[in-house]
Length: 419
Image 1 (cartoon, helix red, strand yellow):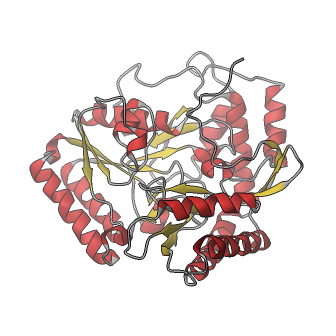
Image 2 (cartoon, rainbow, N blue to C red):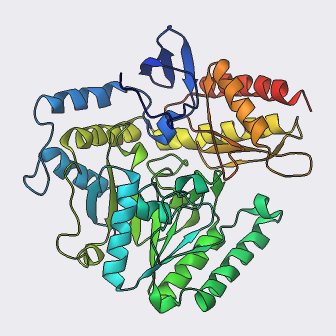
Image 3 (tube, rainbow, N blue to C red):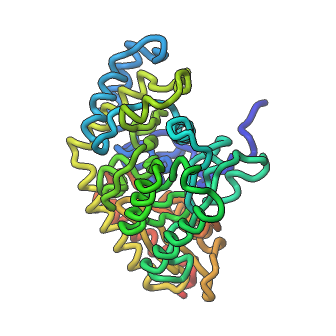
């Protein structure tokens, strides 16, 4: 009898029967508050009626129209709709299926457009699991170990993760930019550096927001040296941070934006956006794929964008994000086991540490497990998996945030013994 790979470890014991909004219902009929959102994917909640209807209607018309063979209306309409929300000047799109594919497409474009071999990524960043994407990923060795050699030409600079360094944010930022300049002097000359790849908020790396000074420093160096600035909005885009794009918090101007996750409410769809001039520098035949821009996924994405706009989900993410962050910090104030709570919008992480400040993976995982037993589904992240993250759908209500925080407070008190 066939079975799933034993490496696919489940974060929770839940076997889902169906989902609705912020809730998942298991096969025993029990309701669970889903603060994982499919790792930030189900932006409009589970099975939003408008998204379901759009997908159902499209399935009856056309499921697959390979987009370098024929063109279809959902793809054309989605391209036009995204043009209304993309950063200024990014008016050309290439669609794929996953975040990793988007990363690889951006990497190929950056190298072909500049003629330069190297890229710079930032410590703690997550950009995917395929070979090139994993080569860019530094949020944990579990994503890249065991299939070396990885792709060459990747250099790593610090991200201003102030809590990790034990510094204030200004000091961490100054250090990160100084080390980037040192990297230029010692590892990758600027005229051999094609691009920076950076997340506005580290995702798998521990839910660490960047800051305006840091991103301004990247932009200035990119402009000075002719380096492309690639902003990975796979997890932070489409309202997740309380602004439409995560980089909107930092007045950042990207050259390429990566999109996926919340774009289509759970249907596989990703892409890259760049200016027409930059996209035209990709080599002929370098962009394509069998399933990219799938008709059903595009229809779901169109409905998702309409729901985000019609229901004011970006503003809701901002308001509920403040509520969630404040509530998580209030819980942390009652225990020494949580060293830091941080986030942006509906991305909130609580980092568990021991009394001497070292990562406390065991307590973080115990808290995540205990929360699942209480009906609150959470995930862990960070290099040591000692950060418990909360990622509810953008449709979450104030009452649901309060319910989750009440459970979280009880769980933390229980697993820490009130210490």
